[in-house]
Length: 109
Image (cartoon, rainbow, N blue to C red; front, side, top):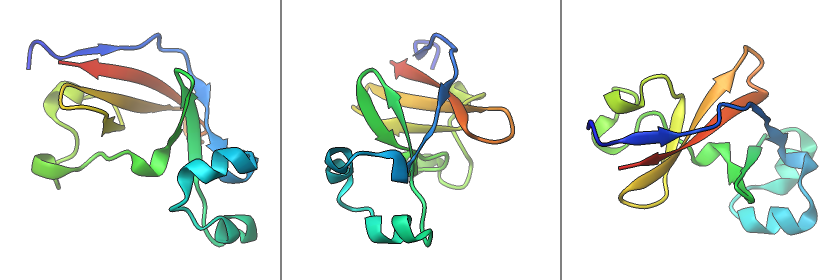
């Protein structure tokens, strides 16, 4: 895995609570029960990266062949990832203890 590269500017960005999304943004995530979010029975957390809104619920730290073992070794130091192609992924690392800020990067192989 020596050819795997994580590109990041290491600048923390704020997470976004589901109730802060506009009605148009919510339509992108039609699998979320927005009535339950509004009622406080469920939650959804997002962030913006490169002009796109991401649902943190879609990120995994234990998926596929690494199930039960956490992230692959080449992603040590990151808290989660979401593949966007066979050769790339978006990775996140939480900053601080409140989990209201995160650093985002792109993994290329």
